[in-house]
Length: 222
Image (cartoon, rainbow, N blue to C red; front, side):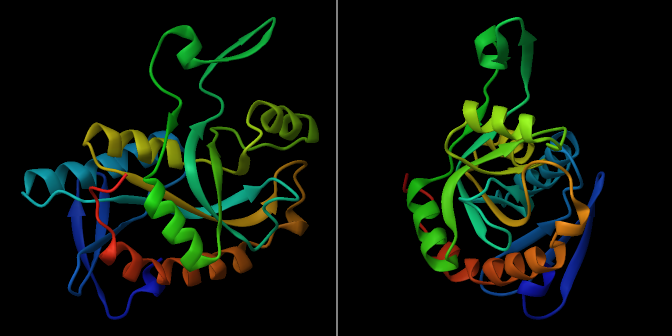
């Protein structure tokens, strides 16, 4: 993501993570969230807490990275902008199937980014808006892909960090956005078919278009 910003980035050490700050009229801080929702939540929370203590809380948190796409709606190389960030495997297995944690009377399973911002980002980047699932175990079979799509018919992509970042942002009362570039289809694992380089290039290009939209966005709009 650093390639999307002009000029050098300033490193700021924080507990558990190093923050990279881009200069300019508006502050953009980058953090490598790591793999999985727990680490992503912890690192996002570290940055959010430091900003709040410093008296400069963030207006928005963006979770960006690559993802598996559900064919045919999210082909390899395409961009997806989450209008719903949903954790797909937090809950319990039962004889009647999967029950989300909310069905057990706990927590939440979904965070919704600001609608006006999602529309603006999708229009600017050419991305498609839809649900992005967060999982702790990447899908590797056709049966699992079909199960997820049946439970989440609006799902366009599957990744591993968005919900963790969204939980950290929600704790601080900060809105969240998730942007994903598709590197592979969701389903049977076929590493030869992965296009990580192409996905990262698409993500960098899309991320580079965010700044003008974010600068003009009113964080008080729904």
